[in-house]
Image (cartoon, rainbow, N blue to C red; front, side):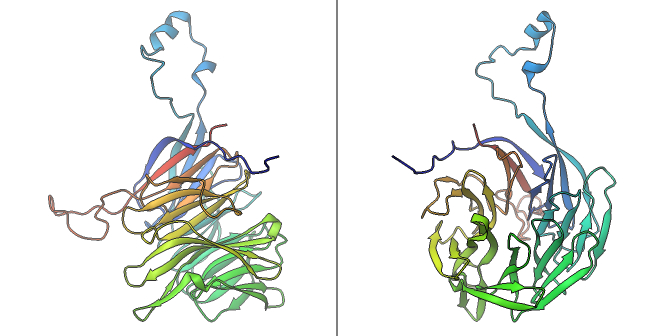
Length: 382
């Protein structure tokens, strides 16, 4: 008997939408009707997820139906069954918005920026307004915001070396922990009683924030390198799998500092004792970082990577495997992957190719466009 999991069919891209600025984060709302994405342009882009009525469901008179049908209907490309309709962006941020997260049951979005602002805001309608906000939740860059499974608490971490816990409903501070280094990632345990966070050097810690004590530490130093007098931090994402039994730390194993090169890496730990179960290298030295992860109910991780200019991947990989079973290298510099609640559709935000976003003048007209983000909408066939 073969107990090996059956891999799903390769996803097909339904449509590509365009955002006018570089996107850094993306998530679908729990109801599946909204997509929100943090941008470098000090805003959170929003889209309505609109299900289009299949043509077969539209009743037309016989003659009208004949005229509407294309002559080469058999060979015509399939129209996307979903549209992303833009809504006015959420404004009021001071810097880049690298992280967004939805409340699991309330109509509330949490977003944080590179200037230290943290916001709990409505996300429906043209005039969505913040319910609460902190202009200086952290002293500078907030790396990540996480929401507890019951939606009662938020956790944030940042460049100021703090991990902070907040009441999700009103934004009031609950607890804080000062660490010794820049904190790059944070996530809650399933019961919401602890958080796991990771720093510049790849040291992962489990914090009981009620007592303020660090209960356990994990060695993810493979995600750090001292190069050219520079501490290169490779950690970007933490996620607990198997109802909290397995901790995955994802990012990059740096090869060099300065113009950072390195390959995407996933480290799996036994959460009970902190032992490293396996290290998976999921790309070459120019493929860079795993910037985002999503867990698919089919039993695999979806990873978005970005490395040297023009490189980027979408990968599907099972926790027990040493290499991805699906890789898409057609997109450049992917920063986010967001799975729709239906488990069938997802988006990947990437970067426009051949841009001059590094500030160098365009040789033709002397202007250079800022980076923008194609938003790729995919579907996993049944």
